[in-house]
Image 1 (tube, rainbow, N blue to C red):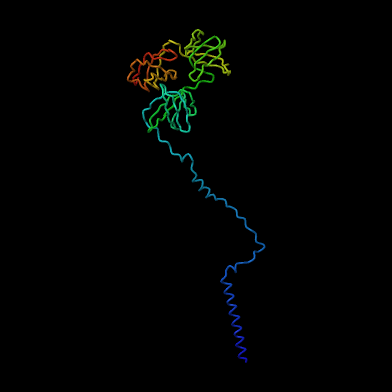
Image 2: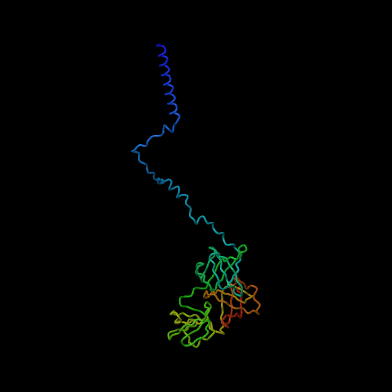
Length: 313
């Protein structure tokens, strides 16, 4: 009997040990169950802040920053070609397409490109493309760049002083002068006073010297609304008077019979009309130095003789 009891107890002990080992194996094979635990009450969330870059990182970033201007490639130099000189009235300045539209002397229109390589001069002073004004007379040194006409230089007349007008006298009375100004679509009327001076070649002359058809320059005090009062009237040319010009040809259009000369004496630009019946000198071309004798007739200079000065003299 004791032997039976001992065997029964042995079976019970072995069975308990077996189930104990089996439970331990199950708990060990389930990691999720082992990790689940209630959060501790004293644990606080940690705030995460972005870190500031170190000095080495800042130096590295600044070293790779490029100047935007350096990313734009330099323009190629202007091709070295003989320039064709064009003169006319500026009809349009297109800053989007970088081109000017010119109504060429003698008829027709021409579109000419420009870019930062283009130099703009007003008289002897270099200015910018923004100084161009619609309706102004301009002269361009142009070259053919590929299939495009490009302006190497643009030349403007010297800027008139404030309160100055130049034109042909249409009518003159003791209290008013009426001019046809080339830059104004209508006649310009300027009042005269007892203190208005009339000059010719820098000397004071009588009012009788001034006749219709004369080319004059008028300095005046602007009063607005037709109340401009002339301080001084300078006679530049009188009808029928002969003048001699010496300088360089900056524009030549034999078909239109027009020559534009830059005077070497007063550095002004003059438009001189050529006699269409005369045979021009073979050496007469843009850039040539000339001496011209002309009469002032019908509100314009008309050449009577044109002599080309040989190079080197």
